[in-house]
Length: 363
Image 1 (cartoon, rainbow, N blue to C red):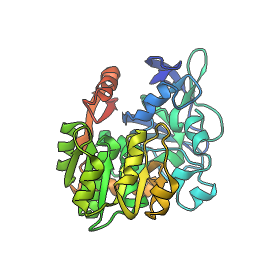
Image 2: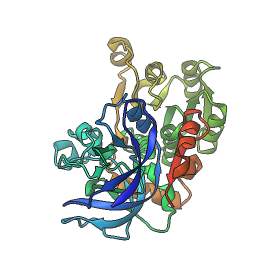
Image 3: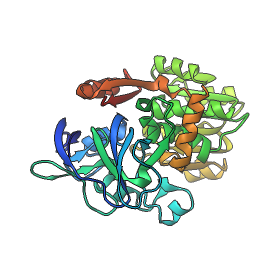
Image 4: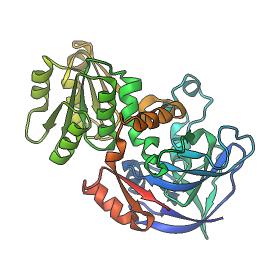
């Protein structure tokens, strides 16, 4: 069938509205009519080829929509189901079997290799095959994706809102709730008030953290972070972050989460911790240097890299939707919607910091 998709064909090239031919789903695959899809900085990283992928490639990895057709062997969903499309994982490696699909041993190949799990592509233009980001390429009117990527969600929530749960929101919230296990009375510092960081703030508030310290350089975002549950806010351009955190927390925070990918902040995320504190880095960026003795051994500190919140999406995403319905996780406050024809404006607004989480709609 003919579809419209957002495709980039060369390094740093324009993202073009492209007519392409989409194949029907094969065994273990699902065809979804896309209602909306979030835009994430990973999409921009692929456009610039900072994250290498085969080109041309259909962007989009935070899709949400309605199942239209299922391939042989699919039992999890059926036509008419509302679904969110998350990251690809094999489901068979040790980490997948142990409940850590974000640490799938085949993660890079399945999400950045441009193909379905069987190594073939479902999308074609006039003169070439088109790869699909994260096995979905969901900045498009339709997508075919492996059933492992698909998460069924309740129908009484606006499906246009739910795409960001597939990556950015689940990364921030999952790291707080699943990997760090922040709990009642704990203290946490969140570096960066974008979609991932704001989701971490909301999750820490949901978990009952005593002190939630948001760090950013944008005053408007710091104010929103306080609305969403942050107890303190620091403008990193105006104040000494480590000094303020140590003052407010009586010596250091239990946890820190670094979401920006700025190398210097990964170091700060260690420096703000108390002894035996733990830091999680979820934003990919340039390298930085640590001193093993000073930063890790003496303070008994831990630093972890975390992908996709270290969650099981089929369990975690419906839980976030339930918390949203209960008014406990208002992630909709991060979202600005744009019709597909205004994709360029959405990208410009995201780059300029005018919107936290742009969502492209197709209806």
